[in-house]
Length: 199
Ligand SMILES: Cc1cn([C@H]2C[C@H](O)[C@@H](COP(=O)(O)OP(=O)(O)OP(=O)(O)O)O2)c(=O)[nH]c1=O
Image 1: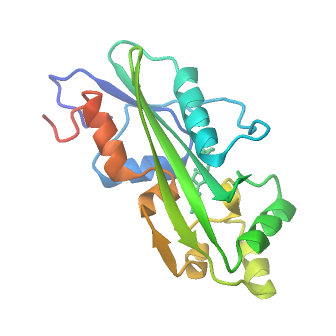
Image 2: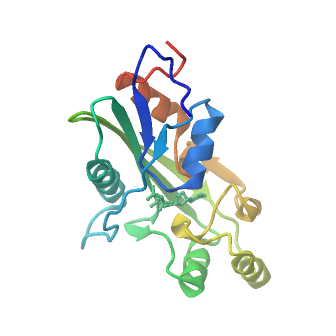
């Protein structure tokens, strides 16, 4: 189902398997016509900086999704960065625990890059948010790990879930941390000619 006006004829394709991104789009009244999860190699390159990395992956995701002339494709990539260190989705509980102890009591950045493609043109933007995590006790870490909420989340936590109790402060975009910065995404979709407000 699409929220597009029938005159525009443009279809939105969400190039992401992330249920968070689908929900965030719904928050601004956008329902993609289709979801096409990308399949790209998300391994960072040697020496690659976090911001370069997320932009490269968002752009690779957009390139990996085939699109017809009447389609606009939206892709994004989110990563957690501590200095030069890139923390992607943990491979298992042990890595999630390692990430949480590294983030405990410190500030880090969450970077989301968004890429919108129409035809051969791509509009792209990244949003950086600084996040402060309180110092975590062993019982806090253990109960969070037991919840399983860390699975599939960059840095091994999700601010919108139980880990919200660990985050007293952020500076930037809450929706960006969750995986899709809505203000910037709306700007990119508009730039690509997608009629957000039923134009
Ligand atoms: C830091 C943080 C990350 N995340 C999520 C957002 C992203 O879905 C995920 C990072 O993985 P991504 O590789 O950005 O996305 P994905 O694998 O979920 O989906 P796809 O590649 O198909 O687009 O981490 C949260 O939901 N909350 C948070 O607080």
